[in-house]
Image (cartoon, rainbow, N blue to C red):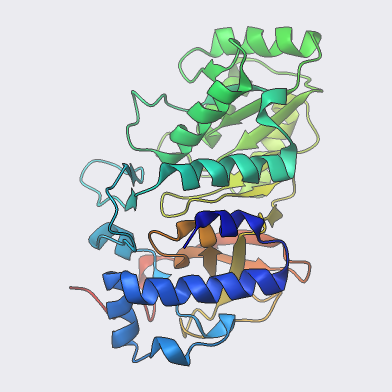
Amino acid sequence: MPYSQIFNVNTLKSFDELALKIFNYQATNNSVYARFLTLLRIEPKSVTKLDQIPFLPIQFFKTHKVLSSSEKIQQTFLSSGTTGMQQSKHYVTDLKIYENSFIKGFTYFYGDIKNYTVLALLPSSLEREGSSLIYMANDFILRSNTTDSGFYLHNLEELSQKLIDLETQNKRILLIGVSYALLDLIEFRQFHLKNTIIMETGGMKGQRKELVKEELHKVLCKGFGVKKIHSEYGMTELLSQAYSKGSGVFKTPPWMKILTRDTEDALSLLPNNKTGGINIIDLANINSCSFIATQDLGKVNDNGTFEILGRFDNSDIRGCNLMVV
């Protein structure tokens, strides 16, 4: 199945049609997903509508090789985690799909990355091998085509001066970083930025006490002197990202869709405006699994935007343990 179809989706009908094609492809070619469907006693031919597609629990990326392709693995992306924790592994057989997804996704919401200086408050690829986020950030830095772009996690003084200098030159800036590093920066120096997008990618990574998102954004807005904090929503198990331009309300690119499931019955979907488990359809995951039940809690609004409201406690995961083998 040519992946170009994925990024040409532009209507709800074309999304649904392609999602069903990919479902049938993965039900046949993904041994983990096929086994999951068998244990659910679901015959793929009986699935004719989007809301009938079962979602694979995200934990399977920790315990199984989730692959729908027999092509050679080009890259294995690993989730972050403390020593001894079991990491998710996303085996990618075609990096071009991932690169197309994050470039087209960013362009869809923000325009050409070449118009920005990209300052990353993230570990470099040498420090954090196997991170899909750092792979994306590094690609953004290279495509931005300016020597000012780069990773600045361990050099807050240089980054502070760089921000001030670029702002003086009226350059468009994307400052993307993990929450704790953005907090470190504003504790080092306060700013009044006018041309900079502050984009947090979530996570204190054990470096600081976790904050409610609303509180975090309030502190960051004050420290950077901006009205809104942007957010990127992605994960190791996905090849696409959703973005928020403020207030914690996210939008997806056309080839990605968010649904919510009943917390008591993992196979039942909820209507809009009801809080439930976040299910994600990511058509870019054609070579792994495009239908993933995450451990995030949230709700989908009537206009298709969504909000993340928390995470499941391990004890709250129900209906997701059919296949512990």
